[in-house]
Length: 109
Length: 118
Image (tube, rainbow over all chains, first blue to last red; front, side):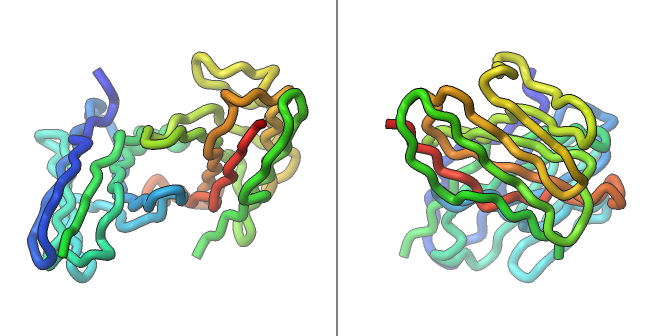
């Protein structure tokens, strides 16, 4: 079983839609969680960390469910510029980071 | 914010030559840096963990004699692709996080190096 699993998508949504991605992780002792965004042929960029209480940054909301071992990312009012691949990253210890395969989002006019 | 600089951004080389890629943490120290490879439309794959002052830890299937890693200082790690072949053509990315950081500190990525071997 993979350490981190994501639905690869693609998710094709119209502008203005709300879209949510989930990511499951297998190690219950995982310590920290992140969402990154990767554009085609570019490096991943940190979108947001994910905290136990849930956190919001503008149109983006991240949630952590430790009991069920998943994290989620909700994007409201999707923009064309949100089209990218979204990676979840789980840290199980200081030097151990595990990446999901990424979920591709296409926001269409 | 923490910045990781990677150089060169792209390189074209002939088969059989070696290519060195540098990864620098510009405003923080990093005892550990990570090297990844990404083929088109595929996921990031961790190649190795670079440790300052000691040997790198390679992932299964990655040839340590082909991908030489040197982490000589707290702000610089290098990856040398030796005797490159066309199948080594890929996007190579490094990442790091501050040694002084906490468990909640995220990874910061270099801008990547696109290697094409002809």
